[in-house]
Figure (tube, rainbow, N blue to C red):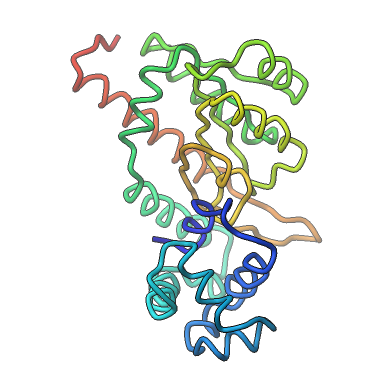
Length: 257
């Protein structure tokens, strides 16, 4: 399992010192994969016991298992540095997104989509909302009518007055950095509202707060000081979710128009 995924799953257990260590590891994976526990402690200005406790917090038996998983991560990562074009980066991202989807446990997500009284959808940017519009249109044929929340203000009103624990909230984000939406997401958690986060694979706040997670991969290309992204991996993720739900209800014998 990817290190970033484990961090998201155990985010609530981590303190500032843990996050400092993990930030260093994520930014220096190849170097850390060859370090002893004492060398990593020295590099992060922490202690051997701090690192050992951290590895156990995120699900490993100890440092050796953590380092083995880190090496697996490195072997599976695409060679982005040598990607010579934006087109090649897109092909690599689509391949990795398919791999993430094939490893995802979809059963609970599909069951929740099926039983939710109302499915609410929110995208943290215009591109994400465009993807959700297409996703919602495809559900009409299944006689399901998800609600697209267009703005933060609409989300605030819906969270306080409409959304309940019998519903499902789907949030699509590029980075998973939801500083502006953090309070609303926490509020939904307090109301026991199930949340499905769909984010770029990274250590991100949204995924740590969500009930269910799906990940895609889209690699930024810097151009004239701006970061350019392809949204095709996001479309692929949402289309895969729709198709798997289609198969799910057909296997249950429900009517598919």
